[in-house]
Amino acid sequence: KNEVEQSPQNLTAQEGEFITINCSYSVGISALHWLQQHPGGGIVSLFMLSSGKKKHGRLIATINIQEKHSSLHITASHPRDSAVYICAPLEGKTGNQFYFGTGTSLTVIP
Amino acid sequence: EPEVTQTPSHQVTQMGQEVILRCVPISNHLYFYWYRQILGQKVEFLVSFYNNEISEKSEIFDDQFSVERPDGSNFTLKIRSTKLEDSAMYFCASRSETYHYGYTFGSGTRLTVV
Image (cartoon, rainbow over all chains, first blue to last red; front, top):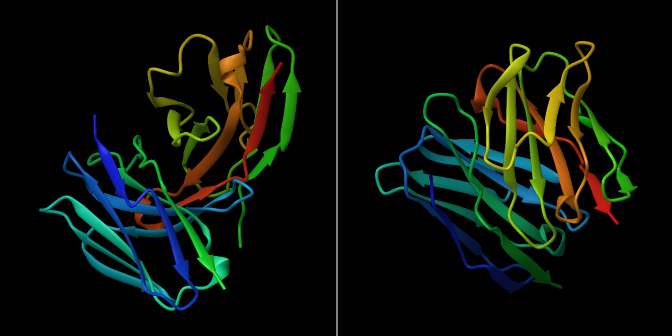
């Protein structure tokens, strides 16, 4: 079983702030998935990364496979970024995702 | 952009009844998944499906649950004899052969067992 920990669990930020969400896991993986869950419940895939860094707009994800740790950064946060952010490691052989973090609930205040 | 479609969006059922949750994955995707999320809790893996058969299933996915791909496009989750604790959001997801392109999730079916 892969123990997935996310921190912080809840985060409130002022619009424009730089946000960091951390994810650590206990078992080696092939890649890690960052997901965004909207207040209505829908889930969107943000990043799939297996090494280094990826950037998409104001979102940046980094991963250190050896240290079993990943971070999601949001630059110049905006109220529309308010959502739950979830990390999910991908199992080595199949690329299936069996375990999910509990999520970080982000609220960005105007 | 291609979507994974789930129906219905919300289903209310009596305890003990059978429900079928439906999903239409992206047409050229090969791997299909069902997940559930009980209100306020984390997303949980139920089952993965590849090459017309179950490839992995979790402890949650017991004999009460079954999956089918009846016609090559739909992917269904059947829950027999529903219990109150089956109330949750159920998500379908699909991906291509290469997981690096990511997973696409459906918008979910909220199941309420009364």
